[in-house]
Image (tube, rainbow, N blue to C red; front, side, top):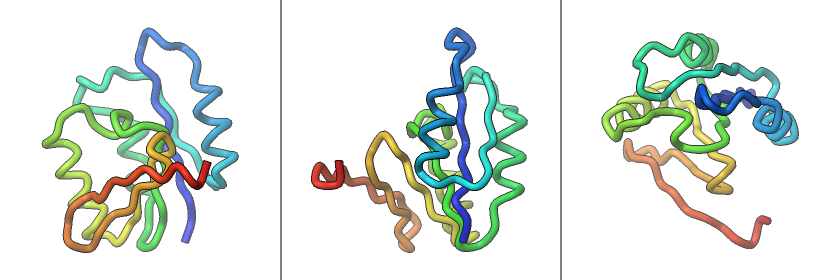
Length: 113
């Protein structure tokens, strides 16, 4: 099991350093990063990241909208992660776990701050 990070900033926000530092602090062994608009469907680094992930890995992102901009994208990716037995952790939500019932279960636990 490895923690793999993905960082993305919007084109108008030039600084990835804060996200990358946070992903490192979270224990990510490898981090993929890019500056892209989420509205574009081709995102090279997320594709590389997804190709790199293996069963029982944990994909770590800072915010949910860094993974996809539409509900459809998020649902499709959630299903793909579930099919590959890859968990998803979103730092901004403190903890997200992927349920085996093919849906993302979100909860925010104030006690772990």
